Length: 407
Image: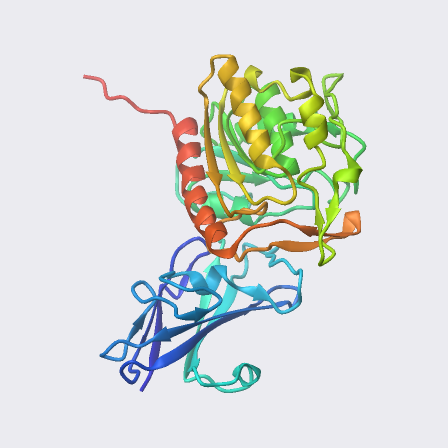
């Protein structure tokens, strides 16, 4: 009798799961399939073929996939290779506190035709719970005070909470901060007022469970441009994670205490639409960057805190590698070494917590475009797993005071 086990059956979204199949005929080829349905009813699937051992076992931590959505030994491959049934659909989770993502794993005969897999009963199946799980405001469980972090997303707007919720599950007081297209915030602001973000910083520092004296920022894309400006202008920001972001102000002016940051010119003629009709924006600021003086870029050398730059080298939305290299070179010229740069070949723009499926393209309704984000499945998955650990290490290093023993 075939059996399928997964340990743990209920876990945080960024925790690995050990999947094993036993009771199979020796050396049999079997098909493992994963599926989930998101809150909007969108279906996602992945599959991989495995060969049982001489004792009739398949262990995803040991055995290579022979084919399907990935090849080789990838214990979490069924998760990060999930693909939408409806093209250009991004997996999203808005209710991060009250319900998990439910992932069904099925063990099927390998000789089924592709058209019959979905309708034929599997040999055995199980359902896994994948949680973000935290308490409201996104507070860590337990007593005491914890490092505080503000979480900023990019140009899609709204309130996106999954990363803040997960950070709280790992010991941070996390504030997911919407800054446009949410409740009473404007759909598309004419300017970005940094005082709004300063209020959020001070609110977090006043909160009784926040450790202080500094707070961290985790930011991506357009949010990373704001995160960089926060680090420059607000001395309370002592640790800033910048994921695939610009080192300039790209489209919406930033204002702080009456001073307006200079915009860098957008070159619409450098926007390209590929054969699938997907927009690629990574070259649209390169002409302006080549011709600009140093004053056209954000004065990162004025920041007092530390930076972690995270770059996907296959980013099709922004030349984020060039931005990060230019920013670190600017710091180097001023004699600063308060930065770390992690650059990942084959990773795209939308770097998320581990085991999140790659979204290489999706619709951006506010721009009336289908946007290509880039990324190759396996290197992107590896980048997500590595960078998530590095983000947490970086935040703890610069937000948690070192306690020295007194003799």
